[in-house]
Length: 308
Image (cartoon, rainbow, N blue to C red; front, side, top):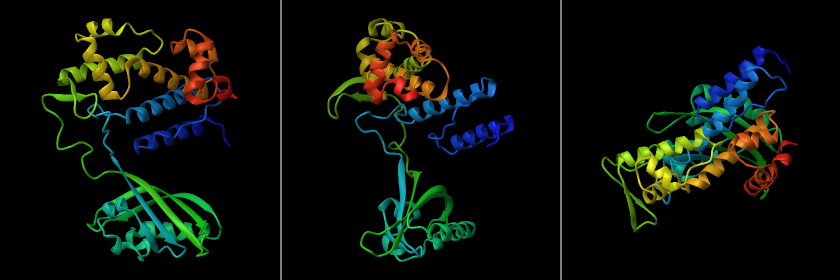
C-alpha cells in the first residue's frame, strides 16, 4: 500500500465525502508519522464522533419521546432478483403497495445505470454460497422521484432448501418532518414524565442550556462548578437548569460530562499516540485508577486493553 502524502490526503478526502453523505461511522486509521496530516486525521476522527453523537438529540427532542427520523428500505429477493418480501417502510419510500412489488424484478425499480451495476456485480456474488457487498443504487419511486443510496447486499442459502436469497437493506431519512408541524414559538413544556409538567422553558432558556452543553464539551479537562453556581452564572436557577438539561439531552449534567470525557478518551486511545496518562489528564480525570475504573464500567475493558 502506498504511503505517500498524496495517498494520505486522498484518504482524508474520502472521509470528508463520507461525512458529507451522512456517514459518521467512517474513520481513518492513524499512521506512525507525526506531522500535520497525522494531526488532521486525529482531529477529523474526533469531529466525526462529535457529529455522530450530536445526532442523538436535536435540541427540542423530548427525552421520553425522541422522534424517529429514519426509514428503512429492506427487501428479500430470490436468486433471479425477483422481490419476495418487502417491509412497510420500503412501500412508503417507493410509494407502492406490497402487491405492486412482490414478484417484480428489483431492476424494474432502478435507473438504467443501477440496472447495469446490479447485473454486473450480482452475477459475481451469486456464484458464492454466501457473500456481502455494498452497492450504490438509484431507485425510482412510483411518483417518479429518485432515491439514491449505498445499499448493503447479502447473499445466503435459505434454510428451507429453496436456494439462494438476496437481502437488500438501506436507511433513509423519513419523508415527513421529524417533529410535529413546526417548532414551538413561545414556550416548550418540559416534563419529567408524560403527564406531569415540571418546568416551562422559553426559547431563551433552551438557548442557555445549549450554551451549558457547549461549554461542557469545550472544557472537558476542567471541573464543573456546583450546579447552583453554574445556574447563577447562566442567569437561571438550579431547578430549571437540571430538569431542562435532562429533558433536552436525555441525561444529567454530570453524567453527560463523564460520558463525553470517556468518549473523547476512547477516540484518543484509538486514534493517537498519546500516553494513557496524558489522555486521562487532558480529559479531567484526576488519577489513572479513576480513569481506568470509569472506562471499564463504560466500555467493558480498560484503556490498556483497548490500546493493545
